[in-house]
Image (cartoon, rainbow, N blue to C red; front, side, top):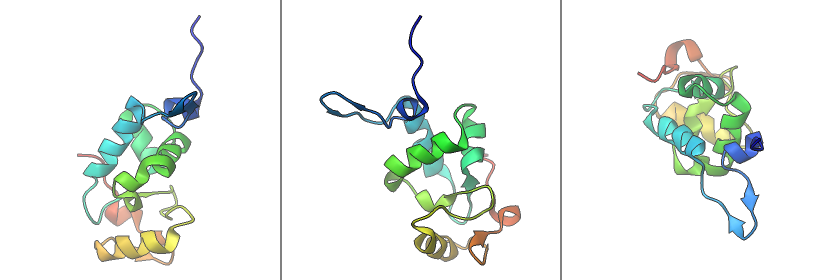
Amino acid sequence: MPRALSASASAGLSVRPGGEVGPTPYAVSVLDLVARIPRGRVMTYGDVADYLGSGSPRTVGMVMAKHGHEVPWQRVVQASGRPAEPLLTEALALLRAEGCPVRGEQVVLAECRWDGS
């Protein structure tokens, strides 16, 4: 029976002998979706996983932590609407500049959540 990949390996975060491995197909699908989120809109980590039909919010977060710099990373937030640390201040500034409604340290999900359509 084939051995199942760990969540970090399936997200493209593992290191194989001989050096770094590029993003897995799952990681590429996360990045492609995040790249499509319009300015002023956001998805939660769970929204991304649900839209793709696989993974979990944590797996999406691992992909974003490793490869997020390649896409508008600030547009993926926690289920509370709060951007993840440690770039909270920078993410909120970028989201405000895009016209995303922000109250305190959270985006107003009811007004700016994107469903992928």
